[in-house]
Image (tube, rainbow, N blue to C red; front, side, top):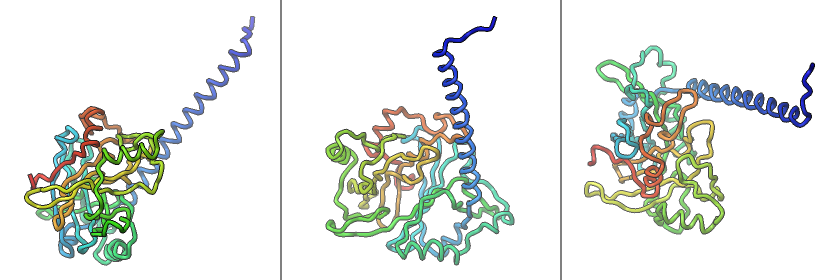
Length: 313
């Protein structure tokens, strides 16, 4: 005898089947989108010789250890490239969490076609920066250094551009500007002011918080305080922004807390977006990226902790 199913149960089964198929389709679509993002991302990679940059501009190089801030045994290398006194490009060579070095040997003949020459760099980067164009933060450039005839390319290199100004307090500070004259406000004070303005909101400066900044005009780089590092006056900056990218790393955050010393450049910082991001197409356990608790992570944010250059300790 054929079993007769209750109409309500039958309807629930149909809905469950539809939901299951929808979830599978969403998963497949997300996977394909991420793969396309990864492929396109890799295809756009360009190479730039460190020797070329060093011959044309002033470079200040520093090394950061991740042990204290993230609890891992990794290194970050900073290359401050001073285009001029008011323009700074920061290349950050970040770890890939795969138990290998941050640099890999490449065949010169294979990368020559993707190598950025001085004229190209001057036209597409330097001139745009000097005209006031804001270039996006990206992983599209790979620094190449030559070591005993071997060409070593950074596996993962973050490109960021900064303007350096000393605007008076009454003048607005544009985004991406290191303004050492900006009125200071630290993260704790900002949280108080933000929640006063938006009492029903969540403060967005948290690890992978989905809270969106209620007023986008507040997004920017804030001066927190002045410091003394190696008997030199230093300035602590932090980025107020949200974590609104869910299908990739929040590159727009960049080096989200950092120490700046005039003439020496950026000598310390944090890269929360990189260490917090779980790459869907190259799964890496959290313990490879960071070994601190969520509570410690949030404490690092609120207490404005950073990695200081080993050369300045």
